[in-house]
Length: 336
Ligand code: IDC
Image 1 (cartoon, rainbow, N blue to C red):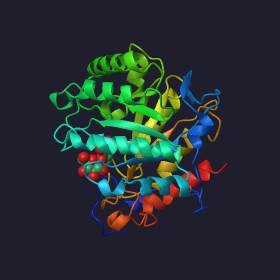
Image 2: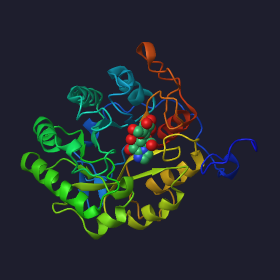
Image 3: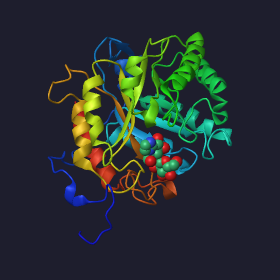
Image 4: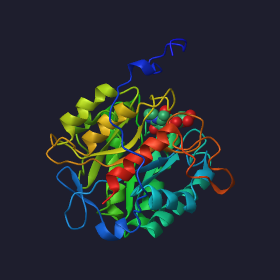
């Protein structure tokens, strides 16, 4: 449409075309954790209790404090039973009205951990560092106590993964690394095994900096790589270059521009997804796990649900363009 205003990501004429997965029949992932047990790293690859590579595919919440009605047992059960998602990420903002000002949101995290256990899928607890971007900032003073509590509660669970800083930004890796070293050390005093995801700088894009200077206790630590398909095509090469060098977990990504809005770039997204599942074999079989932003009914193009879908107990099949694409992809990828 030549009349639409020019933006960096709004020009549909420039978008790639590709083969997209067909809508596909429902897939039920219940019991996935019973099958795979406690996860660990074998080199850079996430593997299950028997040492077989495992790829987690699923959704991230939006801010738990903003869309509580989208995060119910019923909603997650729907994702597990009909999409085949085997992981759910609970994004607990700390700033922006989140945990630092309203600690009651922690209860939602605990509920989600209990529900995912009941359903038999993995869960990522996300300490959602975003604004401010330095995880050492005063906003995040509760981090040590929070992670000690999580580690104490969940050290014996098979299905819990800790993501200790979503997206550091406007801060040097050396400072972020100091934060990670402290939190990892506190967690490891209590929980020696569970997978920890460490956020990287520039909104979790700088896996190359983490590779140069890894955390002090790297055992079962993975590094976050995040991308937004309409904005970050140039980062695909970085993933290809580093997936065999350090353990990467794509703990958040969107089909939209980096703002969370501004269109849906399915084909650009699929290029990344094909690399994560090493479709062409160029990654030596390394499979990267991912959680998608976001399971929410906000009126923005990255949201998987149509506006209003979480009202009145939830109409979970009321999907956005992005959600329909995601469901088709996840069904296709998780169908046994
Ligand atoms: C965005 C939400 C948007 C919200 C904004 C500010 O989609 O509704 O207003 O946060 O809180 C990230 C962040 C994630 C962002 C997302 C899209 O981790 O919190 O969500 N994004 O901008 N990093 C890159 C993009």
